[in-house]
Image 1 (spheres, protein in one colour):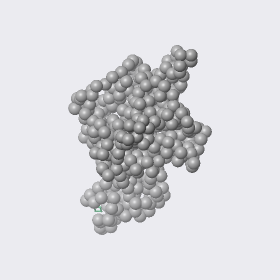
Image 2 (cartoon, rainbow, N blue to C red):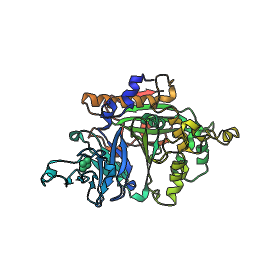
Image 3 (cartoon, rainbow, N blue to C red):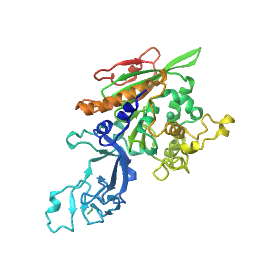
Image 4 (cartoon, helix red, strand yellow):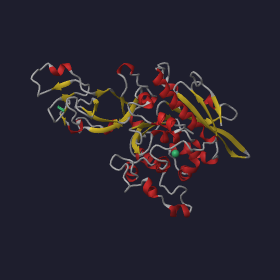
Length: 435
Ligand code: FES
Ligand SMILES: [Fe+2]
């Protein structure tokens, strides 16, 4: 439970808010690389409550501009794409993606342009994603190097969709193992009869709806473990699914091959970026790519139909809180569907978004199933507080070895779930918490 003030403290992300200042200390993914063609049209990007413009020059270099032109603020969304820079249509000032001013045709002094810099933000490209840093230039951290960034693109699959609610609601669902066997009951049943690797890894969760939950603080955030006794009386086993929350908005899924970034575009709109990878399968190529996306519910067809794209988000002629997300009550009555919603992603979206744009936590009743959720509140508060106090923020210590931070799962039978990790959880104040 959080007071309204505590809720805003970690939920609001504008430039002058505690969490906004913390979020601006991290590299955040803002588009898929494939969404930004070379010398295409400038593209509107919202990030942390700011309006920005993404554009890639003819040499393939990505850039992120403040929307207002440096001169007198005309929108760079209207700018001409001219190969080596974006040229504002008002007076023709032209800006390269690195901030160099290439032309100021309405100023006679040819040296004027060399004395000014365009309003741009640092951008990196890695792992099929474009990353932005919106913080103070002297505090820019290194971009974490995750193992999937070094895999061939044929074995990595990235997707992005939008959700019309605050980012914390989306992350809560990712550190809440206990909803999987209920909300996603239909998907779990289908998982039993498919050969997709993703499906097989989640299949066992329907065998125990009330896992035991534990969490450890770390220097990047926390590990969260859901422990289930599975099987029948003759053959029981204990399985642990361990997720990593990496500040400020990444969860490494226990499947071990999924990273989910939950990026606040503003206080009540969120981009949800999935990265899937496989050592053995060409997930990024057809036909596997489409099969995988269809099963999870992340295909372009599904995202469009459920109102999760730029063109459809927030429209109440698409599935939306105002029309109960087109829930199929008949299918529920017939016993064909637990949720009345078509798939895993739609179920998660409806559960998160229906709680409200920035859900009120002052009256919530948390239970033993919410260890990950309370840990999340605490980790986010640690980010906001550290930024305010000038301390090192979670996940910003240069000593962190990103190769050893993982989501994972396995049979533990009498061992600790911590034995599944490549390195022991570390971090000042690492604590154990039992549900
Ligand atoms: S406002 Fe952009 S060049 Fe003048
Ligand atoms: Fe879910």
